[in-house]
Length: 149
Image (cartoon, rainbow, N blue to C red; front, side):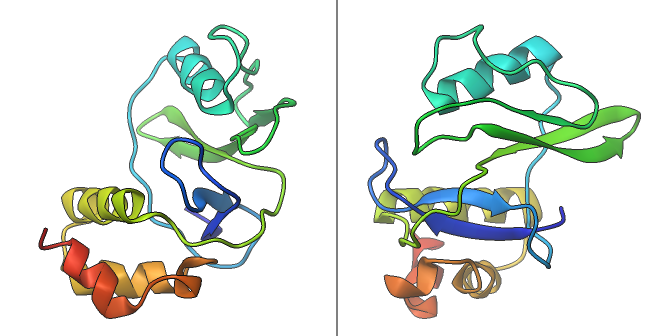
């Protein structure tokens, strides 16, 4: 998807930096697609923003946003269509202070990249090192090692 993966702020769930897409940055970010109804996407967005389920944004085929306290994904970015289905990602409108992801979060992200995109842990470690905030707490070798845990 267009944009750049970044980590910043502090995740209350994982600790460390929270992953978000800087949708306005140059570059390409890896992602994973799930086929959801509009209601399911609103519920996921509400859970991520820590607001009551059902209080998520009203979505159009382009995008949407709503007010939520950081750290939260309060912006929905339209990514076009795939097989006739609109695609969206949850992210933030705010640039967060760069912060590396916590070990458990980084391990989960590396595992997800391997599962969704194949390749090697070293390939994904190099990709993650280009993400904002990661180099402040990780080396490429440390991230690659997470893929073998």
